[in-house]
Length: 388
Ligand SMILES: Cc1ncc(COP(=O)(O)O)c(C=O)c1O
Image (cartoon, rainbow, N blue to C red; front, side, top):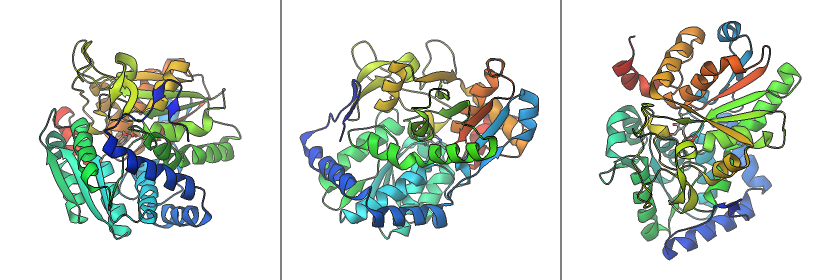
């Protein structure tokens, strides 16, 4: 199995982590195409998680914008985001590898909740590492994880966000690999995680293709998704990579947008380097120290990005745009009030890019924004910035 996307990817881990990663790679080869595995996963995705999710046409915004705007509704999935596509797939794989516990990292809490849900459903125990800052700003998701029977361990190191939670989870996995699977939450990290997570999330783009072709009798002209580690976006893009007439846009978080301030945009504002077992784009000092990241949305608050995105950026197949906190919050309110859909702050970045670039999009073009999650978890943060 390929460990690199062009120059990016690889497996830069302590020797003690090589055996569980090789074990995972072997399990992928054995099970991902196995009919019993795929039918069990498809049944869970359909009857438990709520797939297929609709592609919802937005009549009010489309009228105003002059093109056809659809939302891929991953927000409607059980547990509130696309993360469950990945956790059910990895949970079933872990069971087949004889593991009894899932460990995970989380930023926004959505991956933590999705892992806790999968663990409960599959009769596994669950431990989630979460930076203390994120524990505080995503309190409702912490309560949900605990109610689901999962232990949430706050991480006090570094910036106390996603990057530090991943460090802690990797460290924990070294000593627990015999009975524990590390359910990595995004299409990043050491090989084979970027390939595994992309495989499990690519159902998003597969459904977009079918649904838009059914409604519009053609592919979408433009697919837009937010990029944190990169799982919902690569999931939405993967089945369109060969369709050169489909424009693909990933949206990074520019943070406050003030030059010199922290952001979460390694593809636009970073440089190549190694973090969390992968060679990819990074926010770092010229000496290679990782810089703190910032975004109003915890799920985008990460100083690196999956290696396949670094590759797609380098080749130019995908364009990566920037949206700041303010514009994302504005889009959060606009979608809520124009279409009655409250988006996650992460997904609001993707919508904000479309709103900002409306003049570049031709009349009657078909645009799909991947609505990666719902915004209930973000109400407290939004209330600090918006009047409602
Ligand atoms: C709703 C939502 N969207 C997007 C993301 C970003 O992650 P990724 O880039 O892996 O899709 C997160 C991460 O927590 C999230 O919760």
